[in-house]
Image (cartoon, rainbow, N blue to C red):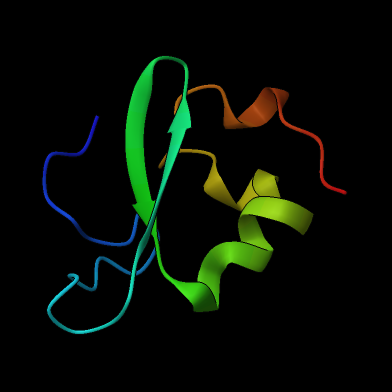
Length: 59
């Protein structure tokens, strides 16, 4: 779980770019607008960054 408000993918903080909070497996994470499409369409790219990403299916 990330306590810093930074994008899960690019690590840019909320001081650098807007980030959106999302919840997964009872934890909260942040993602920037540039990487929301990864979360929606290519979650396999989150393997290694998000536990259980290998079980997610893209839209």
